Image (cartoon, rainbow, N blue to C red; front, top):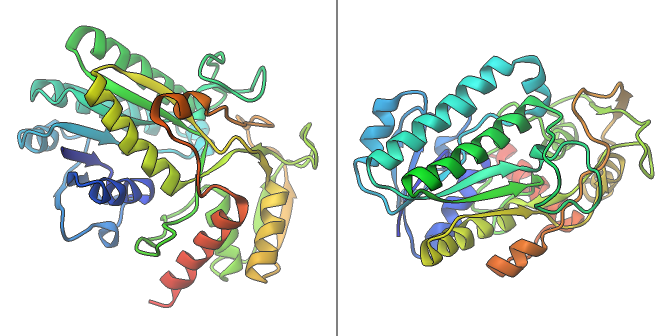
Length: 325
């Protein structure tokens, strides 16, 4: 298939591109490089520099007649979204509506969307399945939920078939070491741990140690980015072969606390990784763990690389490789 990957120069996007290429698809990347990296682009692919807030850029891209597209061009820092909701409204919601409108105007009717477990909010039961109530606790999660609703309407009214992939916590790096472009200004736990381990920052903060969890820190379900990339390709093949939309959770089905992740990183890297406990952030549920049974049933997908050692080791190798450049 001929696939446009919007946000394909980013952290997750570049891994998705690599997986699509491995499965024989023809890929073009659309990215404004505000957070994506030229280093993440593969010379075998076409690339278009453009912005999802510029409808003309999108129309020019979609005029090349793609069979399908993947949308990964959203801002994703949950904490920042609570401080700057206007930034997330414009980029995530307005930008996505621009994408949807350009896609249907140019008859591109298959879409894979990077959604988020943030649509659920504080869990009412665990593990969280697809039917769990959607009550986002941060504005980022609210934008993802609204986009899911927009896609459902575009399916109903315009025939746009979509796969909404609700990631839990994306982490890790390409185990083959081909991709090692580091995220700019990371807000996620593992990159921050690695910045401390590699001397890029002096110490880190752990937000809250008084949650109702086994060690007082937040528990999350970390899923390796290569596992996520595999799910994108399987989802694309599913919606195009069956011509039906799909919404699934993607997680390892295992919960790891912040303290457990930091302690494991100390052992694997051999660095002290100083950390201070500070007040909770608004919008952070205590525990999020996925049920990924529907993804296994529908896509024959199961996390393969999402154990804590692989997550940390692959990330540490990427940081060491990047720093040696």
